[in-house]
Every structure is written in C-alpha cells, then in structure tokens.
Amino acid sequence: MLLADVNRLATIDQTMFQKAGGDPTIFYLHGYWKLAPDEMLVIDTPIPDCTFWNFQVDNVWFESLDYRHHRIHLNAHNAALNPDGTVTIVVAARDPGFGNWLDTAGHDHGTMLLRWTGAQDHPVPATRVEKLP
Image: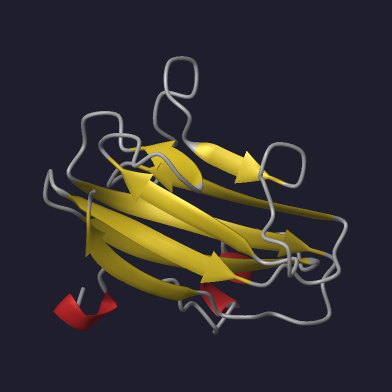
C-alpha cells in the first residue's frame, strides 16, 4: 500500500472484485484509512441513481467492525443527505457533532468499502483528513 493511497476511495478497476465472485451489478470503491486520535476522515460524494448503496468501516482483514455496539455503516435508509443530494460521511474515534459519523470502534486504521448496486455512473468520492473539533 502506498502512503498516497491511505484515506482515499479510488478503486476503479473492478477486476479484483469480479474474480473474487463479486456481483457484476455492484461497483466497489475500496480504501485504507489511518487516523490519529484527534483526526477525522471526511468523505464527500454524490449518490448515483442506483437500487442500493452502502458504506462501511472495516478492520485490516476487511471484516466489518462491531455493528452491534458501534455505528459503522451507512446506506440510503440511515444516512442524512446534504441539500444537494450528496452525502458527507465522517469516520472518527469520537462524534464530531455533525455529518454522518461512523465510529472507528477503537481502531486507528483499517479498510473501508463503498458500493453502488445497479448504478450507471460511478463517482469517486472526495476525501480529506481534518482535525476533530
């Protein structure tokens, strides 16, 4: 993994996912995250016209974090959209008080996955690391 690839969602080549048995109607965006205790990863993305989308925070083995005790995923049913139809997702160790906050559940690094089902467009989200307020 290159340092430039950390805290980004930029998987364009779907070959790896298809070879692993991925559904061809799903477009996957995968990335690695690493945050200091006082940092948050802010992800801004348009939501394409699709039948389903979701984002989840995972550990280094691509396993979802503990969703029973922590909010670690978003989809069209539980995310608050921005007025322009985009979504802002915040990944951090503590709630910054705005956005769709997802908890790192005690981890300081891991993986993340965003996927669209049945979309014709596949926007790549903008990401940035900021200090927690």
